[in-house]
Image 1 (cartoon, rainbow, N blue to C red):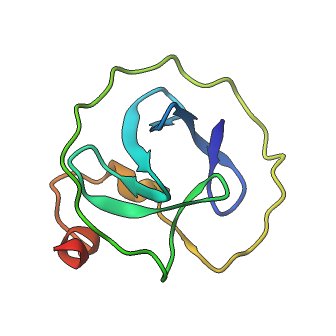
Image 2: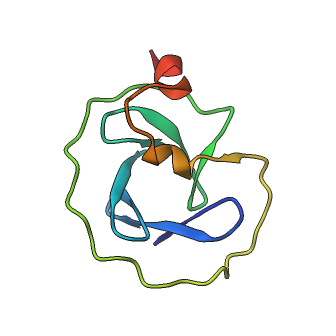
Image 3: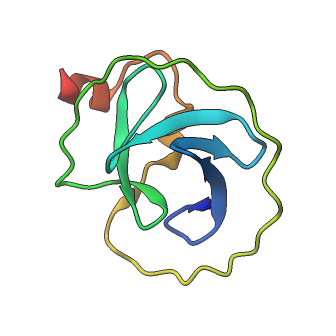
Length: 109
């Protein structure tokens, strides 16, 4: 399953509950409807195959998880997904941040 940006382009894929970028680099995991980095930091919500910031989201820290191994890169995909503006900001790039700082860690603490 692909992960899409709010613009409708594929930016990653999901294997089991792990989110990978298109090159196969593991970035985070889906826990219920929340998306977290492997250090436990809240990133956003899983909504219609996207990682977004939703005002209804309740940030919370979870215990860190081991980073799984890389996966083979995803097959190329086209921007075939219909773009619907739900009014949420794309949060996929927040999965790439490191250091455990920022709004979501502070909001969750």
